[in-house]
Length: 99
Figure (spheres, rainbow, N blue to C red):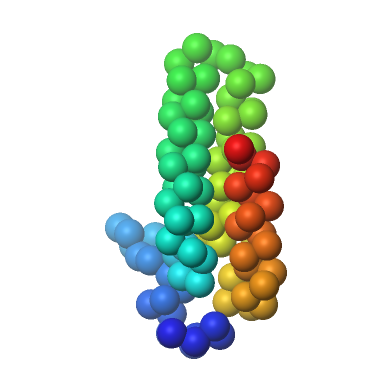
C-alpha cells in the first residue's frame, strides 16, 4: 500500500452506516498493539469513572482515550496527508504520554 493511497477502503471503516477513520496502517504492529491496549484501559476507566460519578477521573480518562486515538491516527490530522516520519512520531509521542 502506498503512503498516499487514494483507496477509501484503506482510510475508512463503515459500521452501521457510520464512517470511522481506520488505524494508520504504516505503524509498527507492536506500536498499534500497545496503543490499542492503552485505549482499552482508558475506555474502561471512562466506564468506571461514570459509574462512580467522578468528574475529575472521567475527564482524565477521556483525555487518555483521545491521546490513544490520536496516536493510532484515528483522530487529528489525517494520517494519509502526513509524512511517514510525522505519523510515527505522533504515535510514539502518544505512547510516551500514556506510559
